[in-house]
Length: 158
Image 1: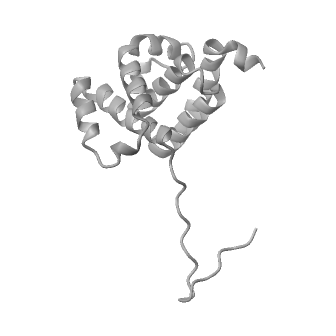
Image 2: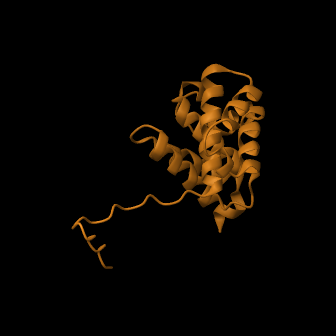
């Protein structure tokens, strides 16, 4: 692979960050909303209204964002029950950001069958790398890997 050629000024051009897909942006926006909901218990309608005012909201997969945020909030108890079988403490004792990421991952594993389970787990790991603690992504990976066996047994066994 060839290295970038220096510009006329003798500087090597800066690397551009990869373009995020609309679906990844939806996951990030849903994560922010879910984090806010977990911390404040604020009305979901107010959280969604605030998110729609943010720059870049038009670049997200709105359908996936709505499904994730609404689904995670409305199924919070069920998602926590799924996660509780695979975490080492009560879900309300988890870091709120890792808790929100795990809820999103579990929701996608449970409901978004069009997304391969490995992709759902990888996307959650990427969220944890970008927003979570130093080694939070390792924890998220381990928990969701175990949850995938429960939620997608046929797909995992292939």
